[in-house]
Length: 125
Image 1 (tube, rainbow, N blue to C red):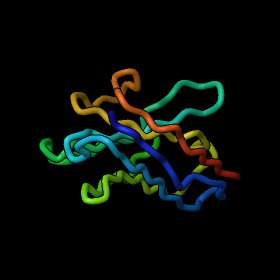
Image 2 (spheres, rainbow, N blue to C red):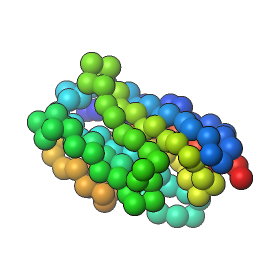
Image 3 (cartoon, helix red, strand yellow):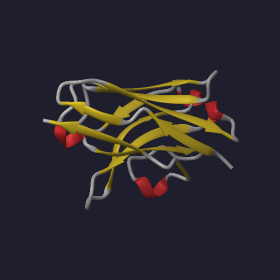
Image 4 (cartoon, helix red, strand yellow):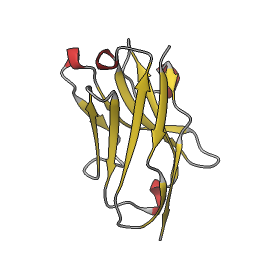
């Protein structure tokens, strides 16, 4: 059983940067694909970014809406995945969730097995 704990959310202004962290426990972290999703009020949980496990080379993928602004990375020694968010926009406001899975790496939230509780990001204009 993998437990995920996100941190780093907060209230920022448009154009600012923020870094989210997600620390995992209870599993072999390097073997898991990790991802960030986000959910705004009244909307579905949307894919943001994912990073493959180390056996797959740690490749990264991004949604079109964040490509070039957000960077996902992982530190396997710290069992932590990060989401560096630059040039934030009001439309980036949402609860950001960390997800992990040992078998799949997909942009569909339903396919991910483990989830954190989420951290809220609010971007003011």
